[in-house]
Image (cartoon, rainbow, N blue to C red; front, side, top):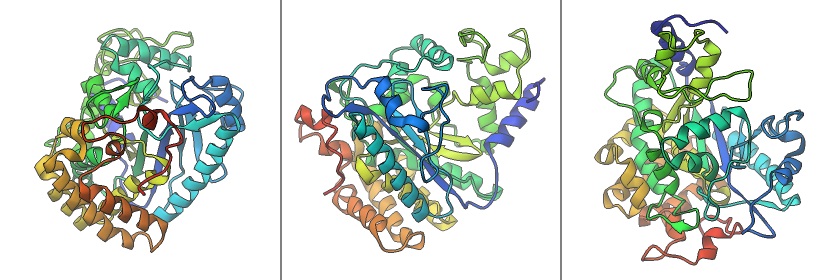
Length: 423
């Protein structure tokens, strides 16, 4: 940890820790789940039951005395502010090894939850409860207070949403602009194809991905996609990070609240009594939530949580499309007609004709490329089945819950037993 004295020094630090270069060898994933009580889905899960279920795998935010052991295949367990449970895998060199390990750790986690009357919901937004923060850490309290000044979306984001977050290497320096551009141009297409949150807090919102709608409205300087015309993604991200407002400051007291309207750049210019350190900057970076977040590798944060084993599909599709520059370039070309259409994608899903055409091209390309990464077997079969029975028919997971007029049997979206995938 060192003190930062200038904007130039801070920007250089951001670029060095967020953008690491090398051959793209590793892949990982973070999976989040909203939870329900198995015996009484209309009642909120209790934090004590979650702590008991996680046992030695509980994170310190839930149990300060925990050993925080990884699951048997290396995944670490965390808990989000509203009680959502999350696992973060180790990085793996092959897609198959990732799928095998995370599938096994997921089964272990879900078995432990079931022993304590808890079950994951198969949706990416809470279909029943209004947002309610369960974790009382100073960081989350400060974030909630900061977001409350902007509206209601902050609490919904923190407490009522869940995602699939693939993690990928940035690649060698010369490939960075292509891979960075591709991950963002693919965003609207994948948001539309995997939209799985038509209900939020007990009502149909009119969005196929209510989760993404919340993120887009939350705090644009913190959550919006970047300007892809910037030639150097690393310097562009560093500038954006320093111009973002502070929302929490690590302190020895219980209050981590940050002064309103002060950016990290302001702090460097003397807005606060003591100069910031690299540790302060790393905490600040963790409060930025763009659709693709660089963190040495990149975290793809725009995909709704999926039902049952279908988390595998977006991970496999992204791995295939970024497997080589030719496939990545072809994916970019397919997405150009819908570039930047994040809101349309979240609102309409693949009912939008342009997004459906782009998705058909993108997913067909992924299915053609995937056999180079993984042999015949369940993963390839699952991806092909989802593409054939859903994507090529212009449908997304939210459409399985809604009828022609956008309405469904309410029990379909509140019942956690809907854990299956595409039939």
